[in-house]
Image (cartoon, rainbow, N blue to C red; front, side, top):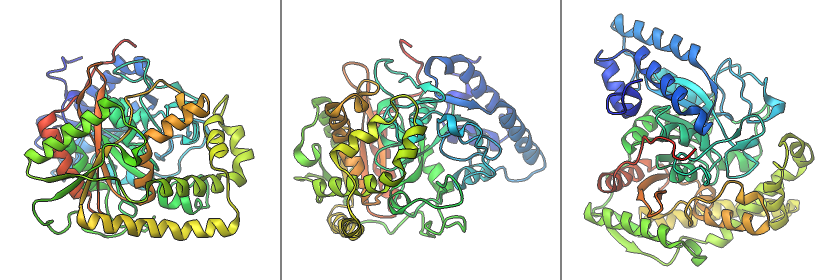
Amino acid sequence: MDSTENAWWARTAQAQAAAVRRREVSAAEIVESHLARITAVGPAVNAVTQLLADGARASAAELDRRIADGRDPGPLAGVCFTVKESIGIRGVPTTHGAERFKDFTAPADAPPVARLRAAGAIPVGHSNMPTLTLAGVHSRSELFGDTVNPWHPGRTPGGSSGGDAVAVACGMAGLGLGNDAGGSVRVPASFCGVAALKPGSGRFPADHRLGPDDPAYGSQSLVVDGPLARTVADLRAAFDVLAGADPSDPRALPVPLRGEPPERPVRVAVVADPGGAGVHPTVRGAVLRAADALREAGYAVEEVADVPRLNETLDAYGALVMTEFAPSWPVVRTLLGEAGHRYIELGMAKRGPVDGPEYLRLTGLHLNIRRSWAQFLERYPLVLGPVFTEPPVEPGLESRDAAGHERVTGAMRLCSATSFAGLPAVAVPTGLADDGLPTGVQLIGRAYREDLCLDAAEEVERRLGVLTPTDPRGA
């Protein structure tokens, strides 16, 4: 295997694609470099669950033929990507990490996989996640076991898109494809030292069905697919490919990738401790470093008291989701494997299902809270805050007991609130803490202004640096 300095797996996704397009390297060489990296470090972190070596080699050969014939290979030519176990890859089981679905072969690519393929990117494997995404915030599945944080084996890599975050952080893939309904790309990105984009509602087409029927209202409106990458520029390249209308998903809208230039200087509201519930000094320091970076870049940065209606939002989020879980829970519970039910049941004990009239009220409150955020963001086009208000925690803390559940769900409160509001957000690293663990923040923007979030995140990255790829430590 090449040294890190020379290896293709260690270069950015954009650098890989540009080299393939210029014929400086073949797509086959890019794939082989990543497969060698997976062989070298994969066993230590258990991030890639189903390796698609033969399919990746066949895709690379076809891409190289396209280039030889003078055809356009696409903007992401040769870039290897992993796909969360809950997102379909044609001809490969979409297991959701559950024994029950181990042979649940996808008949077609999910919309974001199809778009990445059409842009020349190559799937190299599925990636680990909590069983059915419901077993917790730590990426431990019934089928594949635990994924290990490459920075510290005693800390969770986060979830539910933890396998993708680890694969990207360790150089096993240039991009990861996960999804996020309350922090599921942002938390693992922050814990693993990479960047992630949670698009706003209606930006990317997706398909989260387990059969022919679509999910209920909350799952339709809260869950979005999103990319993970080592640099913000690579996130932007993925965003350009993934966004746009698609007949397979009527929620996806033909909104321009970039909006009107905002009034300068762009105002940024800083909320280091959302809701005033407490924030670890390391996390507060990361937010303040990012705020200083944005000031230096010319943003008008202002600390504000709080984001709109946080506690009300969290209560509504919990009640809506738990009400939708309740009817199917007796069956779903049996699919989660040993102790996999504890995370949801601890949530139900805190916020149980509501009756029909209250559920209907919550659907109206959902719109009302989105309106409050839109009004807030009219003054502040961007919000800077923590992804998680603590450093990375130990694996499984959220499922241990009520105190652990409260601690973890409380720490990701800003992620939950912004998912409920349907807003775009970018998680970006801010350096290493004294204990050697990555730190990070998120930048939240107006609806359909992922471009503003990416612009600001790129300024933070430019001043505070890129942390990965990294080798697993202590595993």
